[in-house]
Image (cartoon, rainbow, N blue to C red; front, side, top):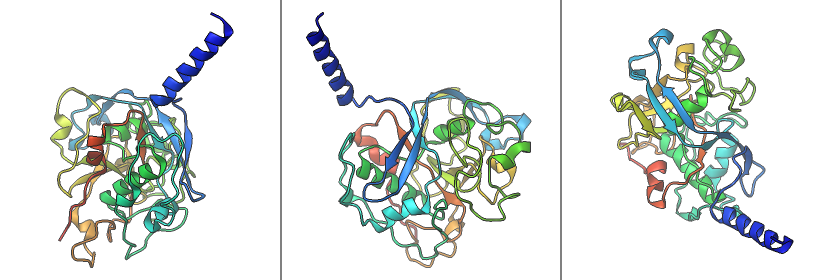
Length: 319
């Protein structure tokens, strides 16, 4: 084969790779167009793991039985989403500026609901965004997808636990609770407040504050019966049909070491909006859950367009 033919074949191969959306599975920086803000995304190579707890680590009833789960490849944000990043979505002043290169999806940014301003603002620049609802976190993901052309969403419970464990089968990715201060802000060391992300040691996947600081929304509704279905499953997700309860993972700056374990789960309750003065209550903000934030994922394989709304969810009014 002569040089010219080889060159033509290489060009055709490159075009095929580009058109199929295949790219290197590496960490990358997602810049939010029109701003100086960016989100660092870390690759998490999928595989099988045992989801759930063991009697030895003092697991709760809803962590049994442990089961084998397989997840696909995805990227996850190295830090919890900050107030500064969420504020770009809140004000929507840069919506006309979008990423134009290497887009994998097209979505009308004008058709995405805009968040209301918080009526009790617990958020501070540089800190993880908190007191936001599941719908607010999911809509941020939808908006970011429209801005960047990449499919972003909340992690599933299975993805979150797989990423938190980072290949380990111990209560925490570093073993037992005796070393927790090195890796997490929680009730014993946080001074009852949030801290800027990235000050503790990351897990082997490059994820900071996977335990503690802000508790993190996942897609799933909370249902103990769902966790007992089958001995093995691939990419399980319990899409919510009701407003409550929905799962948060990782524990927060308020919580005990037991609440921070990889297998531990907590869930939303109505009292998180107990002092909400609005009628109907806010779709976007909590008055009484100042510990809840989120991080985002980007699956390597984009679901069909007909399924996107299942991952982003729809608003449910609360009277």
